[in-house]
Length: 188
Image (cartoon, rainbow, N blue to C red; front, side):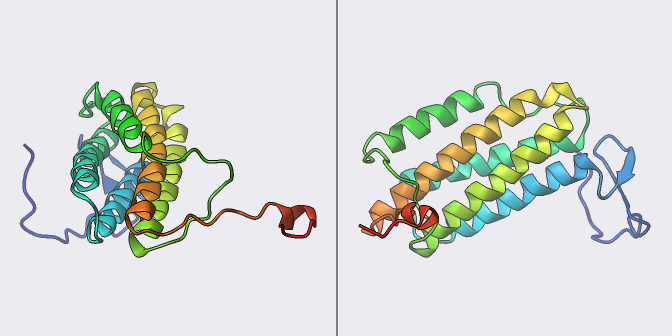
């Protein structure tokens, strides 16, 4: 384990650069910092979701995801380091299948709305998609993080399904996108 921070401010980043986990310095707006910063943001949004009323199965799943995201952030902040477990994508797929099993099939797009928990799950999903895009860009420079892109892709799907699970828990109906509005057709 690395050194613990006893002093929060160091002034070493005042010129716009930051230290990576391997000791090297990069610009704070580098794609690597953008990638792990967005993963950190995603972890925080999941923390907000966990502050909402969530069933125990969802809560346990999201806590595991938070640990994964912390590992993933450490991978991204230390070039060449791998911390995410090899079976993490398989675990997400199993959880996704289990949560999705009792949901009715979707025939339309749904709007990201509902209770605070549902809306926060959708927010987490969109931040996850942004993290995936940032990591994909970084993967063009660092091919060793390819599994990270797959993990984030699967996680965004899981967060979508969790939003649907939470909507059912809340007894809320999903709000479907009215596609006829875009075509100028009258609503049914």
